[in-house]
Length: 356
Image (cartoon, rainbow, N blue to C red; front, side, top):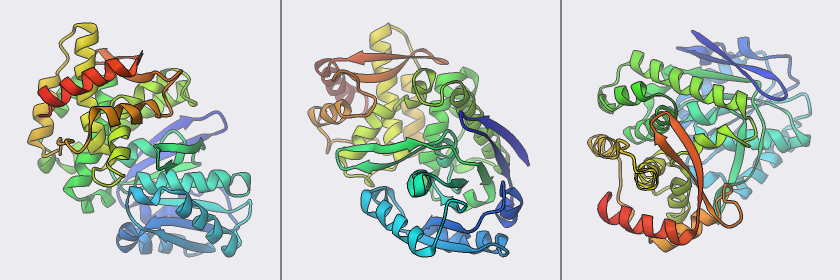
């Protein structure tokens, strides 16, 4: 088992990465809790809920199951989970366990942050994508006008990552998760980026996957420790997300996974970077890799004007300007603000020339 540690502003927490750790979850509880609420979705529940409940057999455990998918990150489900917590009798010494992917982690973490002004929670991620979202303490729900617009910073007391759960992932979920790993390589390590460009997602071994997950978590943890509340370098983790979030919202959440939308956003970030800095970033290599691994790149349902409007309402926008993370070179990210007319022009040419 690999053990990592993250220092947040409020506490330190451990990240455990191993096989079968969901069967021994009780060993990683940081203290004695009065009760535990497991929040999971209907797909993950069928696969892994029983194992987690059995590992907590000596605890007072309750379960809330939500519908799988981004659509559950809304105010109504958030409110219902608070209702569940109240009816189950959770108190300030209770624990929330987020068992699932990024949607469950974001939602359960926000419930924990706001229930009785905040109780402990543990992340038990079951997707590749959640290697990113489970670390760093960002928790939120979506508003119909923007992704993650209602949220908080709330670090877990532990992250328990059982890589065995990844064996049940669909091709879509694997694609989604690897888009974030590609992002982490682009902002930090050209060698790792080149390695990723030489793999096929349908041929990855378990050892390769563990290596890639460990890399991604270390990149995220290092940045989060330096800038927990996103006032500086943590913004670099948003590479590809300004357009990615806009696409998700414009397509009403669920048409593309988060990672699939971010993949298109990464291409756009490299396209704009090449134009702005007159550099030669590996746009064509990344485009070819996405195509070879069956990423959906068709966003003809979206217009550049609508996407610009979404990007302007993004929580990272400042003074009505669109803020994008760009690359001066692989491993050297920077942040730049744009007027919407400039982004609209870039988007039109990007949609015509790159993902036509």
